[in-house]
Length: 280
Image 1 (cartoon, rainbow, N blue to C red):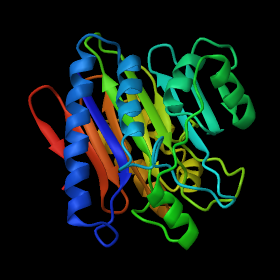
Image 2 (cartoon, rainbow, N blue to C red):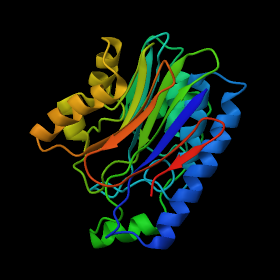
Image 3 (cartoon, helix red, strand yellow):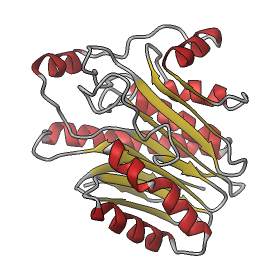
């Protein structure tokens, strides 16, 4: 059993040591809770659980604490992919729900598994998700001042369960001040992908990640026989060719964990039941 989570990017120039320490402690705590949960649950259930904890922590730009778009509203996206069944579900630009990843989880049972905007919100309401404002005062202040704080932000989790099954989940509150209708990578296979061989979650500039098909490329290359580090190297070299900005976390079916970013530092934590690795 293995687990790795990420909380987007961290910029030394934008964030204080206090915030950095808070994120390190938060990620370690969530990774530990998620690993404990993984012992008695599937990889799919666990990645949803971990991402919901990240969504609930206002340190990150997903769920509570999401960025505000150019028209003053918050719209969030999230997706889930099961490596065994190859099913993908997600919500795009959903408003006023506490945990978008949990809506994506419920959508797994549907034939139409990716919903956007009003349709996603209608579905959430019909399935018992109450209205919830994810705005925090800090985000409103940033919006009003048109100043970003903390770089690109998305959260994600990849897990390998005791039965050798993989899953990935990713959630984002957007990049902040974006055009209304803009779609991120988080609810696409470019930003969140899993199969029987590898599971990947990305963060960074959504347009770059989509152009590079980052998550899907890494997983497919591992499926085709590449070592996970080689798959990352080739994919990130291609990202560099287009001047792309991204980070990714992944686990392969043999339990190898890997992470890489194109610009320091993606915030992440991994745990295998014995040792933690935390971003520095």
